[in-house]
Length: 203
Image (cartoon, rainbow, N blue to C red; front, side, top):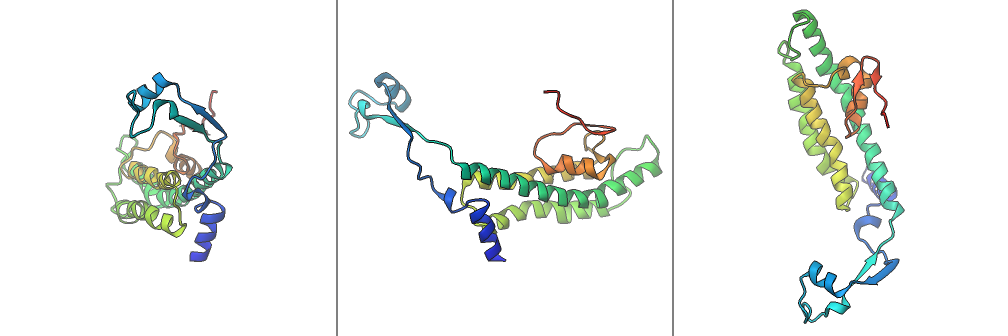
């Protein structure tokens, strides 16, 4: 299993490649004196023996490996969101809807009629969202700080959206179907729904 994790980390998330930035600047330019003093707070004598005229900056070209790793991290996060959405819908949303039907249309959408949704949410889903990023990043040998940050964003949003489902604060029409919940939970961006499903963007 560790070999598989290393393969995914090295070939799909480029953990070793992105561990350090060894790019050569494609463009190097000298910073004007007045701008160097303003940006780097140098005096006329320089800072640490370096004169103002010696300040140079380089422009680095983007790395395709970083963007591929970014897309793969989003896909892995979406798969995690899809899996957890199935659990949330089966053990939290459906019992909530059944309880609301028994209580009438004016009943508040909470899981007060059953303790099972709270056991699933507080006992399984939320702890998993806290623990999983730590072990998964180590398992995949991720070293890039940006990929680490993005790798934990899916679990973070799932944590809070699980609490929304438990306490009845999901956006309108999200709980209408499993598909709506998967779309809502699989991506970190907000998705608006109506009775027919997800709304298309107007731009």
